[in-house]
Length: 72
Image (cartoon, rainbow, N blue to C red):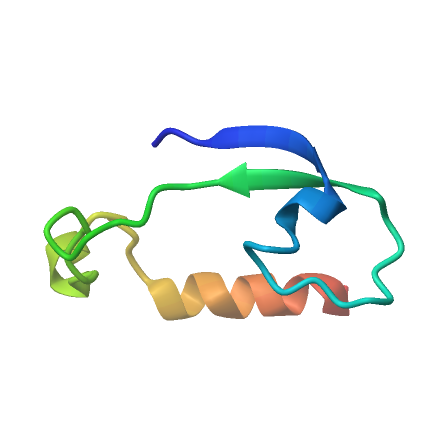
């Protein structure tokens, strides 16, 4: 993803964006990112795609051991 980063005088932005009158800085950093269209956005996460990836056996025993570590 491309981005544009630039230091700009606040007065130059007043016509483009709403800047409160009590904003104290004369210069600001502006970062511009492209808007992703629905065509370029990734699909929602499907947890089923990752089923079995971890290869952990006895998960309940591992969790119990981690919880009990602080007890000793």
